[in-house]
Length: 240
Ligand SMILES: Nc1ncnc2c1ncn2[C@@H]1O[C@H](COP(=O)(O)OP(=O)(O)O)[C@@H](O)[C@H]1O
Ligand SMILES: [Mg+2]
Figure (cartoon, rainbow, N blue to C red):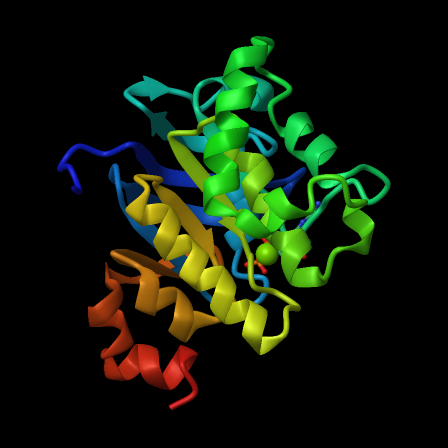
């Protein structure tokens, strides 16, 4: 079920690093239950947009509304406790820690043991491979499994919205397919996701809606299907 009301609304954001402005008026929206994809060339500002939503980069102007609250000026850790999870680019796990320890780290904002147990159970259902390997050191997992762990860890806070930055980057084709299948499975389970991806065709094919960013601005937007079939989007971003 996709509701009409928006869970996240990014309105005309200008942001960057010091005096260097990277985003020149970016807007996007995510509704409950959706997968929304953000595609665009390298350097377009996709990761910067995510960092701004999370609160790691302060916007110079514009507004960010999450779950009906204005969170434009909020601190990143408070964003997490409000229900936003962020999986940064580069499948970062703690290699010396076991799978289970990594997952428990994901629940650091939760101090109730029973809730952590419940989250673990739910995440294990979605990622049976990780449940099997609970005691294995994370550094010994394959790249694809480490990415699954990074995603699973983000789910340990039972987030309302998950931001995934390039979840398929650097993975072998088999794992790329698995990551996108997992996103669809997560959607079935009721999770809402905003995904940045360089794999534009796959990102559009799983998306309810999508945005194309270019040079820090919105360039195209629409349903995943519409953008997949848009001749200009095809020519510019889908290699045909
Ligand atoms: N920490 C930073 N300091 C200065 N410039 C940065 C920083 N991070 C990214 N940039 C610059 O911001 C621009 C957009 O980067 P980014 O948001 O990572 O793009 P994308 O994720 O779309 O590839 C690039 O020109 C990049 O060099
Ligand atoms: Mg990026």
